[in-house]
Length: 384
Image (tube, rainbow, N blue to C red; front, side):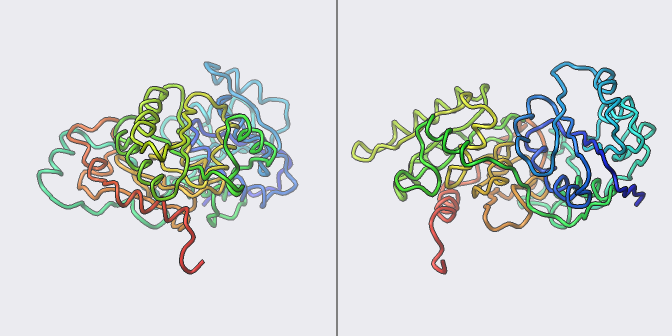
């Protein structure tokens, strides 16, 4: 592998554009910090993700890309800061162009289409990396007709997870590519303020036990477990643990969250009401982080908040349908703190936004294993 190990005094990292992907870059950033402790490391990120990086130990400064801001202007703004080396996490031509326009002498990134000439150190794609190839509707139907059982996935196991993708890039600047768990930072003061504002109690405080529920998925309905099953799971877990529920989601998921919160409240026994707070669309990114940190566990689809919760130390029960946990599972691959559940069907993962058939990858996932997984996250093991 072509490397440019420094040491460097000023490094710019072009961050990724989506919440979950950003969390999966944190192992690479932490490894880069350890390898270049003397360096001033700046992160160039879309402004919607800026608050994610407050207080993060790998980052000295955050530079923002405004919504609709073109790469030519972004590149010009990078000039004059004395950056000696740049790391390009996204595979897009735009991200490489920004650093080229910024006249950063060393520019490291994967040699994806239409951009290798803007990089001084274009790295070949990793052969170990799993592909997110979207299946056609015809292929989905053909797989279901040909086989009643799931076919083995080439992306399962090994170093397919996306965090290896970013670690490999950071290694070109001298970082150790050995994986570590994703990590985000939220202060105790932020947690105390968030739980006070929204009426929760911190994770380890006496009183109400709160669990989180994240039923949406911005990518599309092929990643969403049915809403009525989220509600039914919440009711059964409450029956066993007498817990409260916090329903999370973005502004576009407010109606979904409202419907589920209503089903939870309406389905409870009169003598055992279920405390449920619908906070979809009501929190800032920092408040979301603080509240996820305060929950004892999170039940979620494969989404950005899934990655955020795991990186804050909250156990996650993650439900996978059209996507592959080997590529985007929560936390460090194999971490026993998190439970990953999926129904074995031959067409999954298809990486489609909408299912062209009957969504069996999620509808075949029954309540009982989900309930058991959540209770196992919360209750101490017999050995403990």
